[in-house]
Image (cartoon, rainbow, N blue to C red):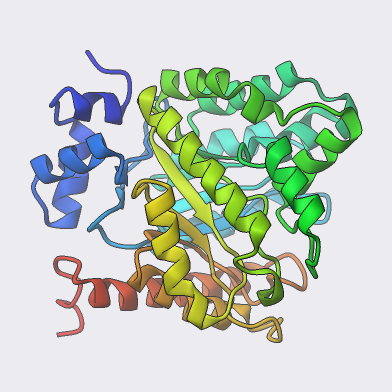
Length: 371
């Protein structure tokens, strides 16, 4: 193999086996796909160690993909229930599963997921650092953060959410601008912010970004640039904190591409319908047309218990205006951990939103099933 990552191959003019598979799934030519991967407007998250994967492409001109969140936590330690959710996600053709486990035998669960699951697997190493290392947050060292990233990469994780954009500059804007109703709702983002405040140090994922990229390039892990300052309420959308971080993410996107690391950029959050299209355009502009991965957006804050509907409305509008990847939201989102029924409802809602957007975007073959 005379290339390190899908992007490296694409830049060298090589069409990889993964590109062939994705091109067939998407009804486009492998050469068209290769050009988009070389530019960075499409990512194919496929770790070299994930042998069970059925590769998918995320980005320009491709079908909108959906992601399912699950995992082990202190409040839900039953592995069999989580595995039931995994099977359901695969059966219902979700293209990605994010393992957000933060308690107990995270390694065993993740390994089984990678060994058996054809969907792309994503993680948030920050969650695992806190749960797995079993130390006080302030005592976790930079080397330990990097070790967790390396461990996930070695196991076969295809994409990782890394909150590198909340550096001291972004954090300062957040503190100075004030006026947020819900502060920082991103779990990984708030942990990093707290670590920075406690230690007085720069965000380790930002300060040692080149080291992070070297690890990811070795295994061809796609970096999903996390939005620590995403709005947690419609009141907080498109504010100075969110946009300052987005500008940083655009700079970090280019740095990753220079090292042939594939990129996805994560986006909001909560916002009213009239702001969604502008946010999608802004992201594509500031982040150089990198694939955009959104949570929702949730278009109102008054529907706990029905947020799969709230987010499907926002997700359809977002994807029709350029978002490439929708993170599902379940009816349980703001209430409790989701059970299997919640997961099913979340997948169905996200799938409908993605398909509605694909018809609007004119994705090749999207209308066939309706006709």
